[in-house]
Image (cartoon, rainbow, N blue to C red):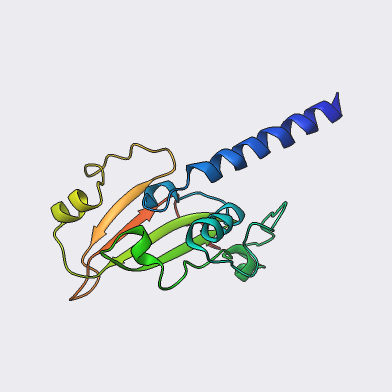
Length: 165
């Protein structure tokens, strides 16, 4: 009975992992939050032709070994979005920053090439209305004037959970 339960849990985890990988889409950065580092690394390799040294399609059975108190660097490890590939997501994107926690994509920050109003950003990127998050993997979407020359979109998958939490 114990073996059947372990197998069932393994099969469920495998199906969730496989389903997660099929959900990620290049031009739909709202599909990215909460993806595992291993899944996202494979996504970058397949869809962006960028093979991260650690987080790629060859990585099997990855489990984050970090701790926000002791193994801080490992706790925040994950692939970096490849420079020069931003236009594949959208022509108006100049940079993409990913934040990782405990092996999952906590947030995505896109810096745009120019200043835009919130209404323009929502229309161009087909973002939902303010305070409306139609996907379970998105906790919040924030449109910010991040510099004198650029607007940023910050998509948060879950609250930051650092050493103080």
